[in-house]
Length: 493
Image (cartoon, rainbow, N blue to C red; front, side, top):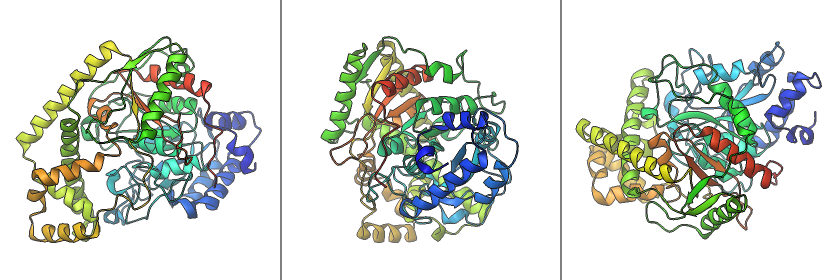
């Protein structure tokens, strides 16, 4: 199969070719590998090839809904037994996973052929993918720009046609941000649906989850069926699932939905006219499809929510750094400077303060539930600005020197909690202020590629649903995909 033909099919379509005997898994794999070798030098999307492992698997008898389809997993949490999980960090360079993660097991059960791991920022801690350990991943639509993060390598590979769908994860927008940057579809499942096993019951109090980035809605729906094929008996609770498979839910008519939209940044910062246009255009499209659409937003203090998200994130990262030091003997210089600063700030958070922050997370749940009593879906920009240029968000050199000195004398954590520094830290979310709400509240949310800037950079829009609204979001996405298709759009690589 040549690349042009391969690119015409999504994962479901490729699986149908394998099932009918029209093509063998090995042939699909070789086409995917050839495409990866053709573009990866420009994109740096795949940081850990697994070609030999994949070739061996492709020669076996495979079963499952996606048997024989080439696939990539993220180099963070998605462990493959015997292969290093780098997490975008120098600190884990000498480790190999002792067993598969549950998500990887379920992808393998679906028959997928995993042939590599994709680039991610250190510990998935940024909305861009520019780790010092592996170098930056680049956007296929314009390689001077970021593909987003933290699943940036996954998005770059899918957009470039290496695979039709790839493993991703989302703890603050890490599926939706790169999907929005690369013209792809990205659904973050709700809290508790996807297992964090076998080593954890949940990640970040259930705010982080595995998922995929894809070119088609039906691929994401089939993948969600695969990821939720069995209940996780080691999880903290049993999340409700629809009676029908998600793939079937995606094919249903969404009905007439009540949709509230906003273009205002929850942080109060300016929003790009392109992002405003993207949402208003989507709102007009939805109204034309018969939905009830009006301007509305949840009654939530967006700046406080962002502070409460970052506070938990910082504590979690402090724990991750400590765990790497204990498990792998990592030294301070094995971590990026920004990571060390964030960890130092996280270590200054008192236990009682942390409990207060989590109590406010519950307040945001209630406020968003009140909104969903009136509206089925919240529509926002996925990004407040078009994808940033590579290096644009680097910490300036003079500030890096100051941080290094403060870390050396042990003052970085304390000073990092002062109000002036807190405002600087908060400004890091200026370009991506919309996605954290769904992580804190555990609601499903998706980025849909309905817009491009005049420079032909993708700029997706976000939809946030109520608890258990994955079927609604998938059916709405299918309706939008039918009305304004995007899978045929290909970056000029």
